[in-house]
Length: 396
Image (cartoon, rainbow, N blue to C red; front, side, top):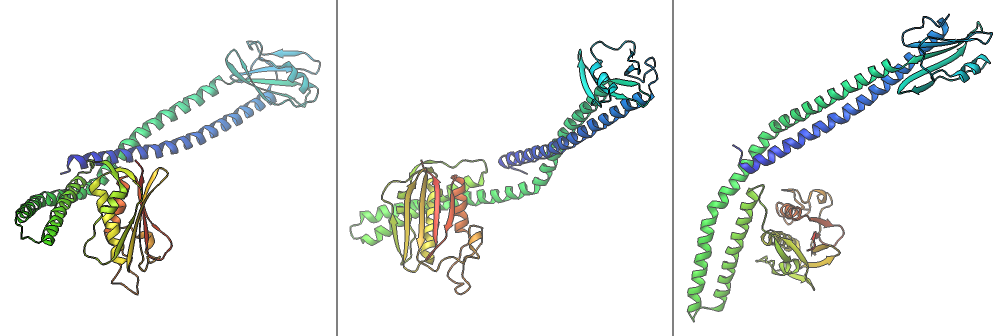
């Protein structure tokens, strides 16, 4: 069964697929309709031209013209006759005179009181000049009816395509939604089960630290280590809370104004003999989740420490409207063949000559996800020696 958050995401994704399917059908329908309209108009023009030419060739008088056609005849003596009922203002006597004089006036379309007419004028071999006038009302009515039918059919097709796309998208996303539900449920359950022992661990560490502080014989080194245990337990609890937020796909992390330079100075990677230097002369303000960004910075520093020979440099600065943090080590660098997929999960940057040193697995992938969640990015800066990673976030 899908949790509410997953159901909302699946429904939104299915609707997006439906809209995309409808948009694709709309493009196809518009293209086909345009082609059909062009073919229809060209076909009607050819039909009108043939109809007028046939009327000119067959006309022997003006009394019985073809349907929707009016005739104007001029005999060799110059006498002009016209079909009874021909609307005033339609006849083009200039074209008749030009054709009688041996010219070839082109066919024209004329509008009279809102009615369209097509006029063709020609002089026949028998010396009679004929002007055939076709009323285009029926042609335009057929064309408009066909276009309206295609539009209605297209709209219905869009609705059907949208509904079908949404339904198919929902069915296609159902297995993925179920898998994500199981994954998020596992994270939530594991986080819930770990919360109690972590809370107890932190409480016991604080009680032990308080008791030992009361004893004047307790060495200072022991108290320092206890302070580290308390801080680590608090950090684990914060990471656990962040994981619980990740388990809810619709939850928003708690954000606050932060100083990226301060986070860089407090990033702690214990158990190493590498010199870690922080170059952050001024504040680098950002807005984000303290826990998530601390995890990202710690992962970058830890990555540099594990692969450096002697030194890791962490630099934080402001560049325009962006906050930039770079972590560089003096190690062997990144295998160019692995660099394009370095931020994928379980990718490794190990060089063939030294497979035991470089192990890029989940750390960099998590950094990339945290950066994306904060509308930023992380990248490998080309060049060496060593490896240089740049984390870019919007400046507060």
